[in-house]
Image 1 (cartoon, rainbow, N blue to C red):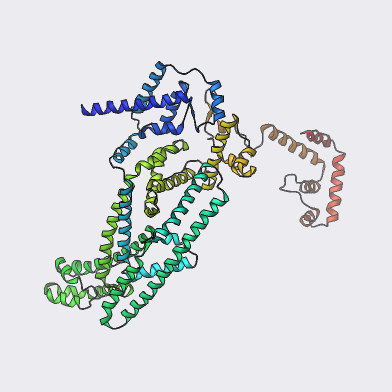
Image 2: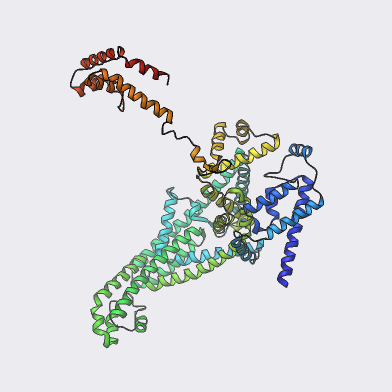
Length: 628
């Protein structure tokens, strides 16, 4: 009963929304696609459903446009507007639309399930976004400080720093900034981000960005990168000195091991001043996992040899082997403690010692004991799980934003589910790159990444023939401006007018318009009975028309008859000289080499043969083909 009441209330709410939308369209005489999509529930954002809704609005005299018309266009539209729909027609249309969007379709079922689960996650407030972003930052820092206790990780970071200095890697790909950002350092970053956002908005709307705005954004970004590079280089230089001290301590006396450990802790603390990018920390963490997995694989080999082949009890192996992985005397002690399997264990001794040597080589390579490396891996995995939980919370709380952006691209040719999937990829990138210190809401920052991901997917998969991303952006700008100019003038815009408005060359505009054309399938049926396909009506330029083929066959017969008055040698010279039944014409020198005579002799044979043809009866027949 409660479920039925809830469904009834939901239908009443939808009908009220549609009536409000129809009232708005009745007052203005038009609606835009964006307004329709925004007023409809998320589950009906399918292209087919929207087309039916648009048709219903058109039937009651409400025009549906891509963009809001200008003032002049509105005046022209008012002059030609038909009578407004009566209340009965309006009620019938609203009821029909409500029923249409309430009926679940097979394509909407996955979307309904997705939206149902998505709606169970509450939205984050500004304070909640900052709290989650700080959790992500804290987890990344904890992971860095743990994996930085591994000298090989420090070497990998310094290697990336060398690539930045050599110009092989951008500093933004390595680090996001510093952990403690001063207020006076935040202001230029926020100003640069504001300029970049304004430039991006103008570029998306098809309005050229002014040179001063672009120059200001570039200068702010260059200044930020210069400060970031200088600060990171100072920290990296300090880390190099600390790493050299650690190597000296390791190479010294055994009593200096505690000093070496404290140096590694100092290195990790120094690197903790930098906020490394999530991608960098992910790559460094993967290196730690590979090293630990290599150790696990060797230990499994030792377990197989000692337990499966040597007969040692598994509990005894776990109790005695842990902590003695590289001790060559471990096997002898284990064999003495288990006399029943002593002989079998000693037969496996060469193989077990070989595996222990591999573990010793890993210790020497890593500069850490196996237990220390495993401890680093455990701490790293704990921090990584907390990081994934925080990322998941930020992503799930903003899934509605992805659907809202994806609905605006339902007419691009891709299904809504695919658009949402691509938008979610952009959302995950935004979570990894979000900097809450700049003072912007996450939704403001993530919208750009979502639109970028969706636009790239449309460029890659939305068309039968893929076009480059930059060309897809140009097509979008040309289409948008062409629609605006059509509303202003009431006619299609010329290429020269579009070029002047967009700041492009006229040839560039024409090339973009040519690319805009959609391909047509050759299997499309045509005709009233649809018994013929388009491919059957396309001319095949690689074959001759029946009439031309018949003329060529008759001409060949006439040529053979005319050449019948010549000797075989003369006929062959004429055919080769003029390319009859040959790939190309031959020169006198080529014919001389072929017949083993001089060039002058070939010319004499040719002239004699032509003289015979001029006085033969077959020449008149050949003249008839000159008109064809």
